[in-house]
Length: 129
Image (cartoon, rainbow, N blue to C red; front, side, top):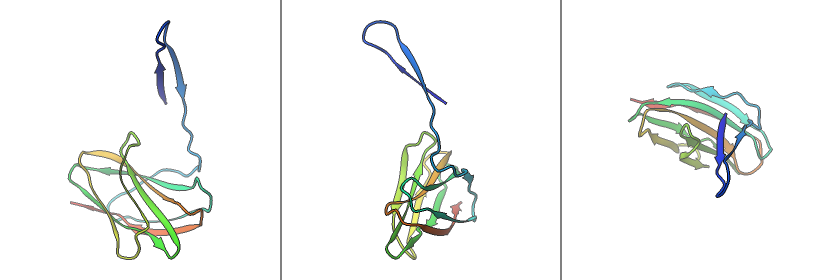
């Protein structure tokens, strides 16, 4: 839970608590080296699949970018604060998503789409060294 404080220019301060809810109800899964990931993203705009990915500084993440003819699956990688550090859409057979961690942390990997179609994807997680 996060707390945000609004401080008025005059008078006392006021606090407000916000709660963020996962709209698609999927469980967040943790990925490990050499794990194969397979799933399906449904045909509505808010569907996505999410994973936790612990990386040490200097480790490189490699994923084949899943793509089907006429359909785009996107990958987004965020730091623990939710700030995007890398991403790609589309790709195709033989294309890779590559990211080298600049610091040791647990990142969030998101698979999502931009075309409101159903997508099935499968990729293998490669982390080196």
